[in-house]
Image 1 (spheres, rainbow, N blue to C red):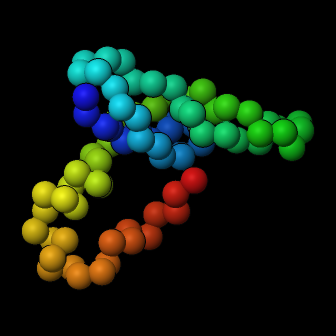
Image 2 (cartoon, rainbow, N blue to C red; image 1 turned 60 degrees about the vertical axis):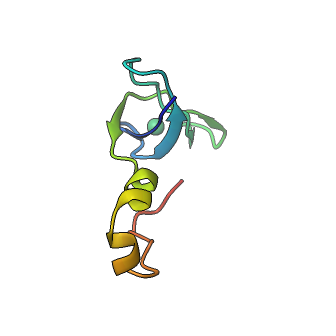
Length: 77
Ligand SMILES: [Zn+2]
């Protein structure tokens, strides 16, 4: 089964999930603080699938070309 990366439309967090082909997008699994308390709760927001950077870097020629510049400047939660 493939690993896809998803980006949450609610908290902007990203996460990876192994899913079956053609399965619907999972809800967000990231922990976010609730509005009125400081307790972390599961976000459960809607997500969209994004290109997996892991797969991209393993396949892409830019891995060798860019040397160590793996970091893309995006903070991961
Ligand atoms: Zn979220």
